[in-house]
Length: 89
Image (cartoon, rainbow, N blue to C red):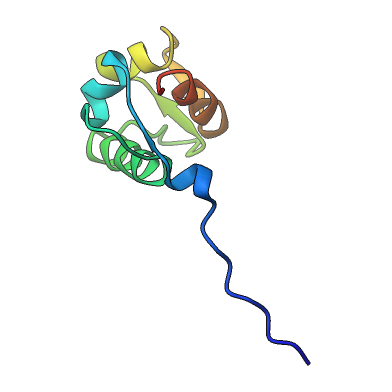
């Protein structure tokens, strides 16, 4: 029986991306891999208590996050990843 190969990290996720000004206010302006960007985003959300208390899938925006969320005051986790993609190059 052949051994299953260890899963390689996806190169696209490891390639550093540069946050724009709105996103840099939350995660910093240095280029970083998407995986690290997501981690920093969640650290910020947890540190500032931005998760909806009743519905944990929803993120409530503070002033800095509102810029990232294109002015929306509340987005789902899934919508957040889509919106964040628009703020990196």
